[in-house]
Image 1 (spheres, rainbow, N blue to C red):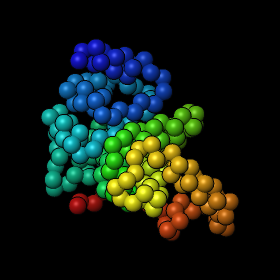
Image 2: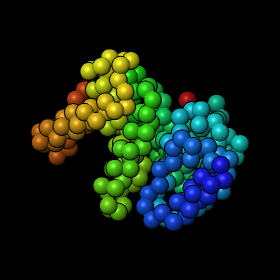
Image 3: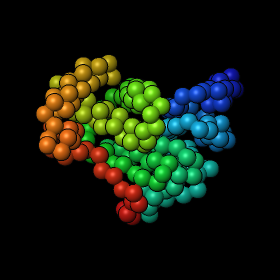
Length: 212
């Protein structure tokens, strides 16, 4: 309703911290695109799934372009100076500077109610931990997506594909962070900690995505 929309306008206008929009807030932005203009000088992160993304098509020309969907996401993020996270089997993170990150980790066990809320919380936590050090918000968001995906893999290992709930992420995240600390302690000679126990980074970056 209008009261919630007014609250969102106030939050976007007055907040002095990074802003993450998900769920109903994305619907309100799709209905009132000018809301994106209320955020200036602060990181803005949108975290839609494909169904929510389609609601933006009315004002984001070409956002659903089937011949080049990755380029469409990149263009939207650059135009509106924000970070766009398209959640899916391969989550895409498009940054305001034109880079696009592809997360190739994760598990079908993550397809449970509240999983997206957990992701939003992880993004918020990492942005808060940055404490204004000006680390690129797209990179922070890509790191959050990685943690979320690795926790999803831990959920699958413990509960299988169907039994996990969002509340189970607590212990899964602790397990993933503990493994990361071990990897940090055993970093290689270049001083680069391993980001995955499977070898190689689960995040792939393209500065200018090729057509797909």
